[in-house]
Amino acid sequence: MRELNAPTTAEIAEFADLFDQYRGHYGQAADYEQSVAWLQRNVSSGPLKVFSAEIDRKMVGFAITMDIPASLRLGHYWQIKDLFVVPQSRRVGVARALLSRVRSSAVAAGALRIVLQTELDNSNALRLYEESGFITLDGYRSLVLPL
Image (cartoon, rainbow, N blue to C red; front, side, top):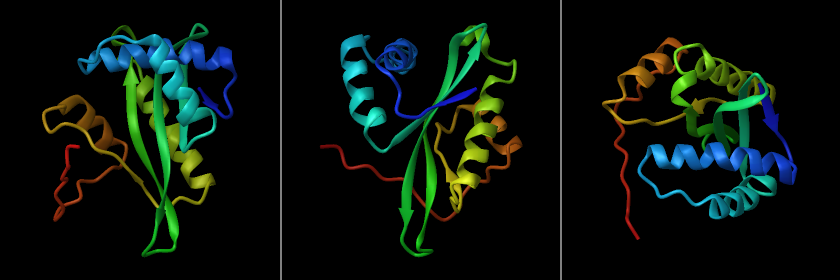
């Protein structure tokens, strides 16, 4: 498990392949070069942090987080933007280990909480998140404004 702080060009290139697989999982067309460019903008010098999981020195999963100001509490919280494990490495604790690493890093950074969202029918992920201590936040509705 490692955090990609100020990742090198080689680390971005390695991660971009896995990131492109993640995008494909959600129906996006593969575009390695655009993935590299996006990651360089948003991870190398941007607001996102990447935590990667490896098995036998090969990246098999990742979590991308964002540190967000919490105006009412005058602090900050973390949002897990993306969490992905390659299919052949699922159900062996990779996602749980990523969540644990994100949690310990968020605590060390003084975050107030960690938030995430997932599809209502993603029962495996929902079970994992609940087992990891996440709770459903009732009384709120997610809205989107397509542009």
